[in-house]
Every structure is written in C-alpha cells, then in structure tokens.
Length: 170
Figure 1 (tube, rainbow, N blue to C red):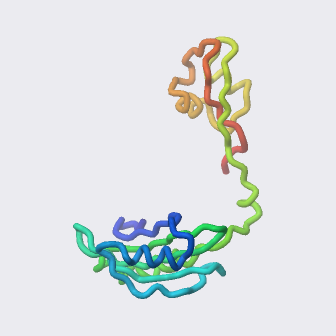
Figure 2 (figure 1 turned 90 degrees about the vertical axis):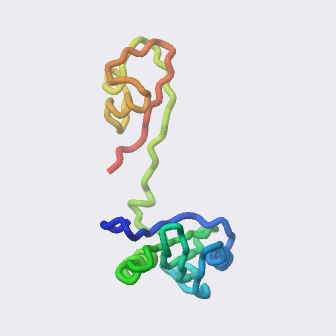
Figure 3 (figure 1 turned 30 degrees about the vertical axis):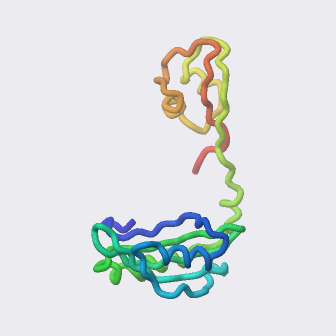
C-alpha cells in the first residue's frame, strides 16, 4: 500500500488454469473495462498483462493486472489506485508487478517452518518453567499467549499445551 494509502499492489492465486483464461475472466467482470490482454513475460515466466478500470461505489479505479504462470499455478498480480491518482503511481506499481520471479536465493529456499507440537503436561508446571526445560524459538510470553494463559499460570497434569518448535526466525 502506498504511504498515502491510496494505491495498492496485491498478489493472489487465480482460479483459472492459464494466464490467458485468468485475464479474460478478470476483465470480463461486471463493472470492469480493460484493454485487450497481451502476452508478455515477467521474471522469465509466461504472463498476460492488461490495463483496467473498475467502477465502484466510491468512483473509478484504474490499474494494471498481470497473470503469471508458475509451478502449475496462475498468480494474479494487481496494481491499482483511484482514477485521478493512477498516473502518479502507475510506474511504481508496474515496477512492483514486474518484480515477480522464481525464488532462487539458496538461503530463502532452505528456510524451514516452525511447527506446532501438542504436549501433555505430566506434572504441575507453568509455561515459564516449561520454557526453561524445553526448547522453543519463541519466548515464554508468546507461548503463554498461544495457550491463552499467563506465563506463570499453574498448569495441571494431563493438560494439553501448544508448543512451537523449529528454527528461530531471523
């Protein structure tokens, strides 16, 4: 979103199986008008691009829609703003849309997710005590929040506790 909160770039998955079909479905929505979708390439990936205008209750939005095929999916990338503001933000929005590319950074590709374990408490304890004895990348206060208790709330034996495990986030 722009600092003035009057322009937006968004990314989502399209339901259609191809970029062409997704572009046609997008510009054929009620209240939308658009230029003829054109084939292009974004980040070396096959794509379709179309300018559009959309009539809303608050006026007309103008923008650019890009549909990129990658990994068996079609990504819908939109940049838009109110009609009067679009000329001022169009170049920036379209640069953002064109930045979509395959992820190739080995460090990013190697990131492992954190996971949720369900742990049965075997003796009376607190989240703070558990955090001292059991590794977690999160602080005791966050683990307590996840479990809807305070860090020093006594937990009775048999209680199930959500425990986050995995690598610490950067």
